[in-house]
Amino acid sequence: MTNLGGEVPAKAEEKKVEEKKEAAPVKAAPVKPAKPAKKPPTKVLKFKTWEVYDYGEEELVFAEADVNLGMSFNFYNCVKTTVRIEGKTKSAAFFSCKKMKVQVNHMVAQIEMLKCDEMKLYPIVRVPQVTLEHCK
Image (cartoon, rainbow, N blue to C red; front, side, top):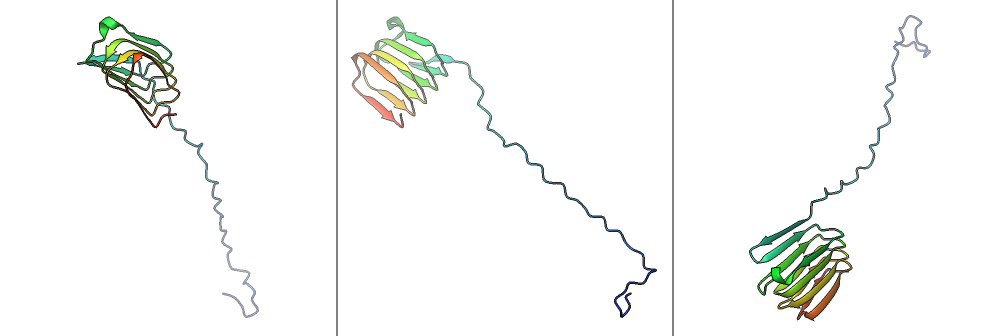
């Protein structure tokens, strides 16, 4: 109740209003994407195709005794690897490889490079066709 004069009666109880202080929101540190776990290098012969995965700074040699005319080679995610394929083979393909040195004696079909960076190819006898897609 208030008087007409606008004064608050002396007997009125004052209520304390506690101000709720809101804590400043805590900003979490920006989340960095996790690096994929490093996979061990793998070299597997499946029927007449060599599947080579995740090799690093190493030299892979496929000797002429291990290679025949119907064989093909697939390399995935290899970095700074030196590859020598001796003898006459069907084809080779490189997927997402970087800074590789590739030396081949004789290819019957072709060499494909998809999403590869800074590749060096050294044909010794014959490579009839080289296909590059999305390479730097």
